[in-house]
Length: 107
Image 1 (cartoon, rainbow, N blue to C red):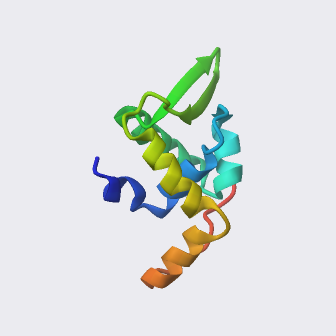
Image 2: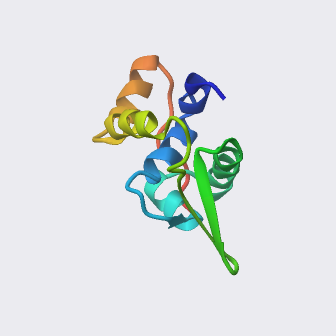
């Protein structure tokens, strides 16, 4: 997946922002942090895990997600995400693009 496609989805970008910080988080916490619905967050996490950007760790029935430190462009991605996710850059960039819509449904 090319970087534009990776970062071009508003919900996916919010899911990635929810994973910044290095800690492992549950799907519920990703939803709460991102404002993305559970179904959408799960779909984006599956895609991000499949392409290697996100790493999933399972403990019995609990799955935790984190950015994959072994992904080849992780340091560059984290720098871009840190800038985009700080403050309200996501909403500002979307507003400039002329697209409508606020936060997704809560979990």
